Image (cartoon, rainbow over all chains, first blue to last red; front, side, top):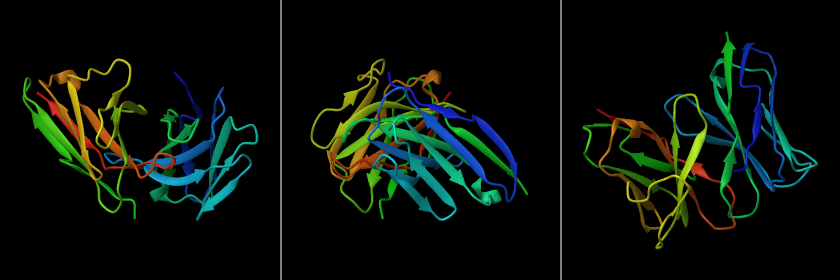
Length: 111
Length: 116
């Protein structure tokens, strides 16, 4: 099946630092979504991207839909302890089709 | 808006029993609901897609007779794990979408199933 390569697998940073993670695919997606999952909880949608080249922000989070439609990145600026969690990218190839998830990036923020 | 709930949040059962998990969209009508399974430190694995009023579509390798899915209304889908065994222990998460062409899925908080 389709696979998304998400990197890095884990990150350990100091509070206040900026963070960047990305997802790449061998296939073209027409939608990219970024989720955050806290321990024992379901994923929460952070940002949705629908157009190649689109750059969207949500507070300290910024995500971009790659021009080739095969990649996306998520940046978190000025990290805080509550940013800790697992971040998943998800791609969708066509409207109404299933989501394909990346393997997740475990973020740890040291105060 | 776009709130999805799951019940129960945690369940422990004996091997051989059946467990029902409910997924509800609280403030929107979900034409499509999805059921995922997640093992520790792993990503979400899609088990089945459920459209209101029709039979669920199961992913390859997922036993439809073991994981019974019912989507009888636009706000409720249920997953029943029949004759549960310890290897069925996992974190089960549902998600809901309010239109076929609408791409965003909203996830429930998950149900932790432990089979003794």
